[in-house]
Structure formats: C-alpha cells, structure tokens
Length: 410
Ligand SMILES: [Zn+2]
Image (cartoon, rainbow, N blue to C red; front, top):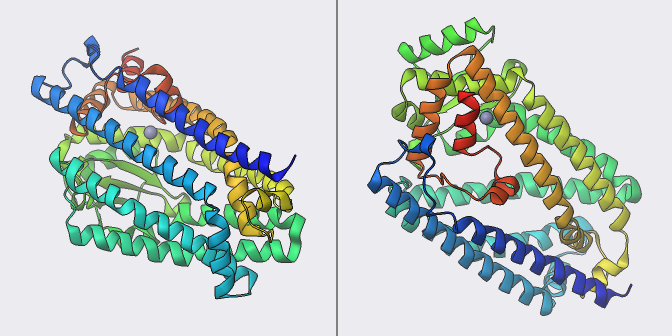
C-alpha cells in the first residue's frame, strides 16, 4: 500500500462516520412526532409535549449544523496538509521529542476548543436558556472553560509526556507501561474524583439531617449497605436538569445527589433512585465496568503498538519525519471504526446493567416510586419519549423510559 491510498482511507473513514451518524440522527428525528405510548401518557401535558418536540427539533438541527461544520473543516485540514504545518511549528519551538509532542497536541486541541466556543456558547445561552434549563452565568461559563483548560494542561499534558517518554525508552513495549499508567490513573480518578476534581467546579455538602436522610439510611440499613457519605451537589448553579451518581469504592464510596433532584422529587422517589444506584453497586457493575474498560484499553494500546512505528502513517498525512504524535493521530482515525463497534457493545451491556439495577430497586424498595421518579426526570429534561430503535441500540446507555417502565411493571 502506498501513502496516497492510506490518505484516502483516512478520508473515507471520516466521511463514512459522518454519513452514518447523519442517517441515524435523521431516522431518529422521523419519530419526534410519534404518538406517545399509553404507558407514558401522563408524562407531559399538551403544552409540555409541544415544547419537548420543539426542543428535540432544535437540538437535532443544531447538531447537524455542528457535524457538517466539523466534517468540512476536518477534511479541509487534511487536504491542506494541516498536520504538516502544526508539526513544523512544534519543531520550531523545541527539538526535544516530548516537548514537540506536547506543543503539537496543545495547538490542535486548543484550536479545536477555540473553534467550538461559539457553538458551546450558543447551546448554553440560547438553546438551553430558551427552554429554561440554563442557570449558568457568563462568569461561571468562562471560569469553567479556564479551569477545564488548566486541568487539561496539567493532567492531559502530564500523561502525554509520560507516554511519549515510555515510547522513547521502550519502543515496542511502551504499550504495557502505558496500559499500567492509564489503568492506575482511571482507578485513582474513580476513587478520588469527588474529592479532587468536583470541588474545582461545584460545592458539595453532606446531606443534612432530616426526613430524607432518615429514609435513605433506613433503606441502606435494610439492604445491608454501608453508606457514610451522602453528598448534595449544587447542580442548580448550571442547569435545572437533575441527576444522582455513585463514585469510588471501599472507604471512598459516596453517593452524590444533585440539589435539583432533591427539589424535583418526593422523598420516596429519591430513595427509589438511590435504591437503583445501590443496585449497581450490589451487582458489582462498577467493578465490571472498570475491569472491562481496563481490558479494552489494553487491547487498543496493543493494536496501537503494532502500527505506531510505521513511517507510512506520517507520509499519508503529508509529514516527512515520522513521529509518535503523528502516529497517534493516524491511529485514532484508523481505530475509530473499531471503537464504534466496542461502544455499541458497551452500550448494550450498560443497558443490561440498568435493567438489573431497576430490578434491584423493584425487589428491595418499590417499583411505583421509581417509575414516578423516572417520569418526572424525563419530563423535567424534556427527553425524547419515542426514540428510533436503531438509534437507541447505538447511542443509549440506558433503556428508554418506556422499556424501563414496562420492565418495572413486569
Ligand atoms: Zn443506572
């Protein structure tokens, strides 16, 4: 194979992915006006339903605009030898390989960030604002961006420097060291995310004494679940959308409830949501997901190690000197069809886990409370009640509201 053919393969992969996503999204949008199934009749009143349909359409059109813009700029960047220019600039800054890699990715990621700001601004301050979701101020928005960038530079830059260094000193075995590093890092983040990262963006306070705390503790005791850390996070600082999640394990395990969730739901509905989360824990979903993601990372890195040394990757992208960073870019494109497939299976597994967690809540608490909480959460986020089946299979990490309710009523 010559570099020219490889270049066309890159372009073909990018365009196929764009077309595939666009078709699936279009199929999904055909169902925006479907009749609501009987089980879900009470979720929206007439006005709310109209509003939810409008919200879906606005989001669909906006996403389409973004993906067209993104595919056009990406293809242009490839055709105009963009990577060769950035590679050149990075080499002018330093002759140190690690520094070149960091400057190279720094330029690409930062340019990408700057280009996407108008879109992200519009989504938050026009779309989300119009539908009453946005609570973020301009100040919060700007500081979120800045903090995100600093984190990216410190954590992303640090990891990238280490990985480049591994490659320098071990070449073919670098994937093993990288695998170790990435696995350790994801375990560490899983444990300490709530303590180290969340405080940079949100305030977390222990759930105050009262009816809710007593109800949660009663349930936790009943099912023999040791729960010392229940925190409330000020999600309302940014959005009215509600959530709850579990993080960490061992002594670090904690449940975090959005303040918006506490405002929107009754006590027994919140306990039902928690029962679902505890279900994930009891069924060991958190451990399974971690192991699976570590195995997948190892697989990906191994494939990467087979390809990265090939000088054709650089030539195909119009860069003369072959290098680790250009190899990474080329690999990312070549691997993307495979990651679409693994994502598909990961989503299928995730949906299976969601059913199991729902079943746990049904068997150990009550299904009615969970059903009413799911309905309220769907209503308050104007979510799509009639998604396309294929779209669900590809993109949904949770079963649809209808599927979950039918399962809970079984
Ligand atoms: Zn869940």
